[in-house]
Length: 233
Ligand SMILES: *Cc1c(COP(=O)(O)O)cnc(C)c1O
Picture 1 (spheres, rainbow, N blue to C red):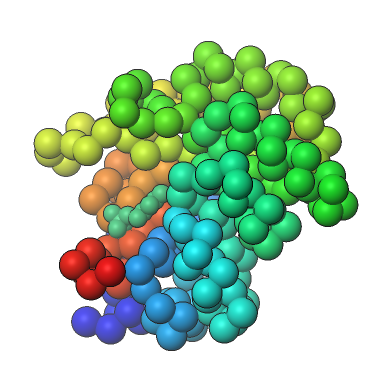
Picture 2 (picture 1 turned 135 degrees about the vertical axis):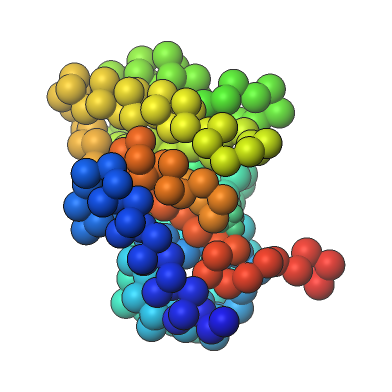
């Protein structure tokens, strides 16, 4: 299977999941999770029509960006971001999806103000309340969203989550539903410096369930590029 064939299959699955949920497939954007794939393969995915690319590591972003890997689509940062790497990401990506702690929010805000940019961000929610995972609780996210006026260097555009690894299909629907509730809740408050347009949830194994629960962006790696070969690096 080529990358183009894979993307086409995913589009069909998205359309079917959207139809089943009574939604317009056009509301759901497909982000290619490009970690461990080189610039050429990323370009192939872009040519196949993915709507955006997402990188996990600052080093990979720095490698592929000058090679024009993402040309034609927005690029998002979706991985855990260390404070000392913030200046290598802010202003270089359209969105940082993985804002998972206040200290990181503050660092992004400072850097953006220094650069004279307004960085779009999502809050990452630890929706399964897993102790080993970072991310805000829904309560923290709601409270922080109400104070976004204090962070003029950023612009809160929505929420992202990686739910727990599920045992069987359908297990994560309850988490996706919780995410949707939080998303709608924050949206309804009309907070300063907040415009909730992106609910980023659903990956290779569960994007149909995420779409059923209101996802507006799925992040897909394996189903586009095949299994990642971690032994290689
Ligand atoms: C790798 C990754 C994905 C894609 O995962 P697949 O299961 O390969 O589709 C999505 N989101 C994030 C944050 C990732 O790191």
